[in-house]
Image (tube, rainbow, N blue to C red; front, side, top):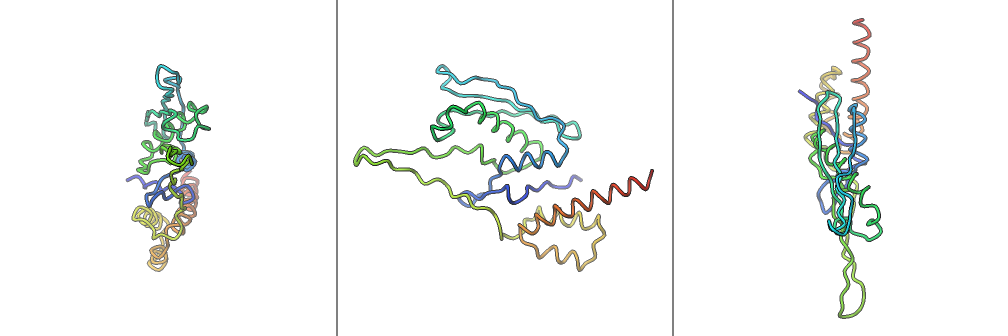
Length: 201
Protein backbone atom coordinates (compact mmCIF):
# COMPACT_ATOMS: atom_id res chain seq x y z
CA UNK A 1 0.00 0.00 0.00
CA UNK A 2 1.38 3.38 -1.01
CA UNK A 3 2.02 5.88 1.79
CA UNK A 4 -0.32 8.88 1.36
CA UNK A 5 1.44 12.07 0.26
CA UNK A 6 1.10 15.12 2.49
CA UNK A 7 1.96 18.62 1.28
CA UNK A 8 3.94 20.60 3.91
CA UNK A 9 1.71 23.10 5.70
CA UNK A 10 3.70 26.13 4.57
CA UNK A 11 2.46 25.42 1.04
CA UNK A 12 -1.21 25.12 2.02
CA UNK A 13 -3.39 28.22 2.32
CA UNK A 14 -6.92 28.66 3.61
CA UNK A 15 -9.11 30.70 1.30
CA UNK A 16 -12.55 31.37 2.73
CA UNK A 17 -12.12 28.34 4.97
CA UNK A 18 -11.09 25.93 2.19
CA UNK A 19 -7.50 24.62 1.76
CA UNK A 20 -5.61 25.32 -1.46
CA UNK A 21 -2.09 24.24 -2.39
CA UNK A 22 0.65 26.43 -3.82
CA UNK A 23 2.39 25.27 -7.00
CA UNK A 24 5.70 25.44 -5.13
CA UNK A 25 4.38 22.79 -2.74
CA UNK A 26 3.34 20.51 -5.59
CA UNK A 27 6.79 20.88 -7.14
CA UNK A 28 8.45 20.06 -3.82
CA UNK A 29 6.35 16.91 -3.47
CA UNK A 30 7.24 15.87 -7.03
CA UNK A 31 10.95 16.35 -6.38
CA UNK A 32 10.82 14.42 -3.10
CA UNK A 33 8.93 11.61 -4.84
CA UNK A 34 11.63 11.38 -7.52
CA UNK A 35 9.67 12.65 -10.52
CA UNK A 36 11.38 11.62 -13.77
CA UNK A 37 9.91 14.23 -16.10
CA UNK A 38 7.81 17.39 -15.99
CA UNK A 39 7.42 19.04 -19.37
CA UNK A 40 5.12 21.60 -20.99
CA UNK A 41 3.93 22.15 -24.56
CA UNK A 42 2.16 25.27 -25.77
CA UNK A 43 -1.07 24.24 -27.50
CA UNK A 44 -2.50 27.68 -28.30
CA UNK A 45 -0.98 31.15 -28.56
CA UNK A 46 -3.36 33.90 -27.34
CA UNK A 47 -4.80 35.99 -30.17
CA UNK A 48 -7.84 38.11 -31.01
CA UNK A 49 -9.43 35.15 -32.79
CA UNK A 50 -9.37 32.89 -29.71
CA UNK A 51 -10.26 35.52 -27.14
CA UNK A 52 -6.62 35.97 -26.10
CA UNK A 53 -6.67 32.51 -24.50
CA UNK A 54 -3.40 30.64 -23.98
CA UNK A 55 -3.52 26.86 -23.61
CA UNK A 56 -0.66 24.65 -22.44
CA UNK A 57 -0.41 20.92 -21.82
CA UNK A 58 1.84 19.35 -19.22
CA UNK A 59 3.25 15.84 -18.93
CA UNK A 60 4.54 14.22 -15.75
CA UNK A 61 6.35 10.90 -15.50
CA UNK A 62 6.59 9.60 -11.94
CA UNK A 63 9.34 7.48 -10.45
CA UNK A 64 7.49 4.24 -11.30
CA UNK A 65 7.08 5.26 -14.94
CA UNK A 66 3.42 6.27 -14.75
CA UNK A 67 2.53 9.01 -17.23
CA UNK A 68 0.06 11.82 -16.56
CA UNK A 69 -1.09 14.56 -18.97
CA UNK A 70 -3.30 17.59 -18.31
CA UNK A 71 -3.96 21.07 -19.69
CA UNK A 72 -4.18 24.59 -18.34
CA UNK A 73 -5.52 27.78 -19.87
CA UNK A 74 -5.27 31.49 -19.18
CA UNK A 75 -7.17 34.45 -20.59
CA UNK A 76 -7.60 38.09 -19.55
CA UNK A 77 -10.80 37.08 -17.75
CA UNK A 78 -9.25 34.16 -15.85
CA UNK A 79 -6.10 35.90 -14.61
CA UNK A 80 -7.82 38.83 -12.90
CA UNK A 81 -5.55 41.88 -12.85
CA UNK A 82 -4.51 43.48 -16.13
CA UNK A 83 -0.84 43.32 -15.09
CA UNK A 84 -0.94 39.54 -15.62
CA UNK A 85 -2.31 39.70 -19.17
CA UNK A 86 1.16 39.90 -20.81
CA UNK A 87 2.07 36.66 -19.05
CA UNK A 88 -0.81 34.45 -20.21
CA UNK A 89 1.46 31.74 -21.63
CA UNK A 90 3.41 31.42 -18.39
CA UNK A 91 0.24 31.30 -16.31
CA UNK A 92 -1.28 28.64 -18.57
CA UNK A 93 1.95 26.66 -18.28
CA UNK A 94 1.98 26.86 -14.48
CA UNK A 95 -1.69 25.89 -14.28
CA UNK A 96 -1.11 22.89 -16.54
CA UNK A 97 1.84 21.72 -14.44
CA UNK A 98 -0.11 22.22 -11.22
CA UNK A 99 -3.01 20.14 -12.54
CA UNK A 100 -0.83 17.30 -13.78
CA UNK A 101 1.13 17.16 -10.51
CA UNK A 102 -2.08 17.04 -8.50
CA UNK A 103 -3.22 14.06 -10.59
CA UNK A 104 0.16 12.35 -10.48
CA UNK A 105 0.38 12.45 -6.68
CA UNK A 106 -3.34 12.23 -5.86
CA UNK A 107 -3.51 15.67 -4.23
CA UNK A 108 -7.16 16.66 -4.09
CA UNK A 109 -6.64 20.34 -3.24
CA UNK A 110 -6.97 22.85 -6.07
CA UNK A 111 -3.85 24.93 -6.57
CA UNK A 112 -3.86 28.64 -5.79
CA UNK A 113 -2.55 29.31 -9.30
CA UNK A 114 -5.71 27.80 -10.81
CA UNK A 115 -8.01 30.27 -9.06
CA UNK A 116 -9.64 33.14 -10.91
CA UNK A 117 -9.02 36.32 -8.89
CA UNK A 118 -11.59 39.07 -8.52
CA UNK A 119 -11.34 41.94 -10.97
CA UNK A 120 -11.98 45.54 -9.88
CA UNK A 121 -15.43 46.89 -10.64
CA UNK A 122 -16.52 50.50 -11.04
CA UNK A 123 -19.86 52.01 -10.20
CA UNK A 124 -21.07 54.77 -12.54
CA UNK A 125 -23.28 56.29 -9.81
CA UNK A 126 -20.55 57.99 -7.83
CA UNK A 127 -17.52 57.64 -10.08
CA UNK A 128 -15.45 55.83 -7.46
CA UNK A 129 -13.74 52.53 -8.15
CA UNK A 130 -15.01 49.76 -5.93
CA UNK A 131 -12.67 46.79 -5.54
CA UNK A 132 -14.08 43.44 -4.60
CA UNK A 133 -12.58 41.97 -1.49
CA UNK A 134 -10.20 39.19 -2.41
CA UNK A 135 -10.13 36.04 -0.29
CA UNK A 136 -7.88 36.25 2.72
CA UNK A 137 -4.95 33.84 2.54
CA UNK A 138 -4.40 32.33 5.96
CA UNK A 139 -1.59 29.83 6.61
CA UNK A 140 -2.78 26.71 8.39
CA UNK A 141 -1.06 26.64 11.78
CA UNK A 142 -2.69 25.25 14.89
CA UNK A 143 -5.40 23.11 13.35
CA UNK A 144 -5.67 19.49 14.51
CA UNK A 145 -3.67 16.98 12.52
CA UNK A 146 -5.61 15.43 9.66
CA UNK A 147 -6.56 11.76 9.42
CA UNK A 148 -4.19 11.45 6.46
CA UNK A 149 -1.30 12.85 8.50
CA UNK A 150 -2.08 10.45 11.34
CA UNK A 151 -2.17 7.54 8.91
CA UNK A 152 1.24 8.51 7.54
CA UNK A 153 2.72 9.01 11.01
CA UNK A 154 1.44 5.67 12.30
CA UNK A 155 2.72 3.89 9.21
CA UNK A 156 6.19 5.31 9.67
CA UNK A 157 6.06 4.72 13.44
CA UNK A 158 5.49 1.02 12.78
CA UNK A 159 8.41 0.92 10.35
CA UNK A 160 10.62 2.56 12.98
CA UNK A 161 9.38 0.23 15.76
CA UNK A 162 7.96 2.99 17.95
CA UNK A 163 6.63 1.93 21.34
CA UNK A 164 3.11 2.76 22.56
CA UNK A 165 4.30 5.83 24.48
CA UNK A 166 5.97 7.35 21.41
CA UNK A 167 2.91 6.64 19.27
CA UNK A 168 0.70 8.34 21.86
CA UNK A 169 2.88 11.46 21.56
CA UNK A 170 2.27 11.49 17.82
CA UNK A 171 -1.49 11.43 18.41
CA UNK A 172 -1.23 14.70 20.37
CA UNK A 173 0.38 16.69 17.53
CA UNK A 174 -1.41 19.53 15.76
CA UNK A 175 -1.35 19.90 11.98
CA UNK A 176 1.85 21.95 11.78
CA UNK A 177 3.67 19.68 14.25
CA UNK A 178 2.46 16.59 12.39
CA UNK A 179 3.83 18.00 9.13
CA UNK A 180 7.22 18.57 10.75
CA UNK A 181 7.16 15.10 12.30
CA UNK A 182 6.40 13.54 8.92
CA UNK A 183 9.41 15.29 7.41
CA UNK A 184 11.69 14.10 10.22
CA UNK A 185 10.37 10.53 10.31
CA UNK A 186 10.54 10.26 6.51
CA UNK A 187 14.25 11.00 6.72
CA UNK A 188 14.68 8.34 9.41
CA UNK A 189 12.75 5.78 7.35
CA UNK A 190 14.89 6.51 4.28
CA UNK A 191 18.04 6.19 6.39
CA UNK A 192 16.83 2.90 7.86
CA UNK A 193 16.04 1.50 4.41
CA UNK A 194 19.45 2.61 3.18
CA UNK A 195 21.15 0.86 6.07
CA UNK A 196 19.12 -2.30 5.45
CA UNK A 197 20.08 -2.32 1.76
CA UNK A 198 23.73 -1.79 2.66
CA UNK A 199 23.71 -4.62 5.15
CA UNK A 200 22.14 -7.00 2.63
CA UNK A 201 24.94 -6.46 0.11
